[in-house]
Length: 252
Image (cartoon, rainbow, N blue to C red; front, side):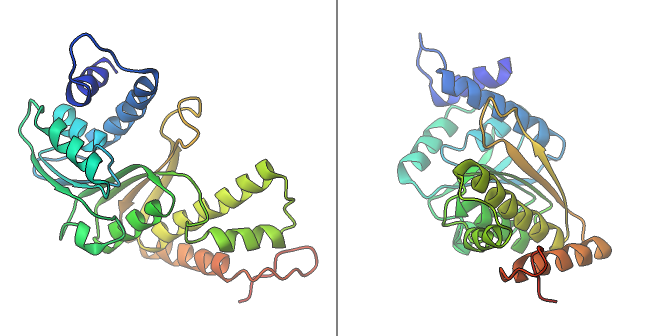
């Protein structure tokens, strides 16, 4: 943690006599946990894609502290991309850095091939776009931490219909948790059906951030696992909202 906090200040604050803010200290905990994950899979020469990167806290700290040699940053906000380039100039270790100002949903933003994809707090539909792009690129590893389950999320409308069919009440907190769980279920099955061995885990405690779940996925292409996930995904997507004898009817 001390090394992460020091590097976070040196790269992104870089002002004598200042210290990290409370929100920065929370961010440092997330970054430390993510860097621990990356340290297990990073190898010399492997390309790390930091998607929906913001200022690329993950990508640049991975270069500074973990030894990542090649970083491809995707960030659509020009101001954040500029701050990323400024922070990169303060790196003490050499790294090959590419910063693309573009949307993660655009194939033009992605490299031809990638070894590891990370997206820390990809907001709303950006998480789904990163997931789909990582699958399309046949990336070895994906570390995805979604944020903000807005109506723009592709499976959101269907999750709402399924919640209606199950009789979920309109109490906001109850309904929100069910809908989020259905969205997360669809994302998990989508990865597994595409051949990814997937673990959903808490990156940090919920006291650090309520958006604390991480999808850690490794491309394995295990046929039986893929078939089972595909069948479950088809059932989930086929749910039409009709009710039979108290159960959700899913067409075969």
